[in-house]
Image 1 (cartoon, one colour):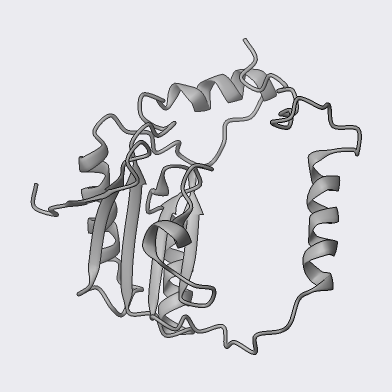
Image 2: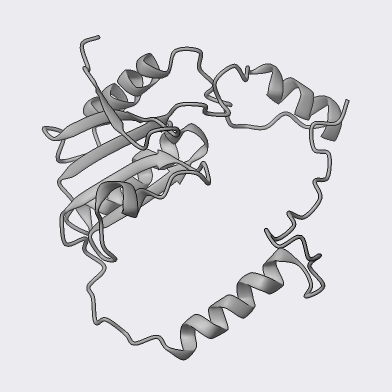
Length: 185
């Protein structure tokens, strides 16, 4: 069984088929339009609010809008599930030690694709491509508990300087509201 079946390109809302190339071609064209009116805001790489937001890569999460953030306010670090992995710790370490962030906000969400996925995913990949991935899926069954685990991974990392303002939330994809997770359960 293949776990990587090709997917058709999404059709525009008006129902007219895309005849302008690939999705990447459309993104490059959009960038050219953006760049034509772009003015360098003269910002520093250091986030204005000294916060790093770690969240899931889910396309339904518009983090800047949901959190009232502007360009330059935060570092946004995303991966599948918003799980705190070694690479997230790497990014947070650079964010804190080189670029001055002090707070960490973790955001998981309802309806996440990692809910119910298992490590069998890695075995299926190995069967399909002949090599087992070196990374863990980091799937979970309990959303709140996974947020707690992510908070704990941040709080116990020896590489991070600032661990006193680490908070975790679940974003509801149907209401847009954040629900804070008590780290103690």
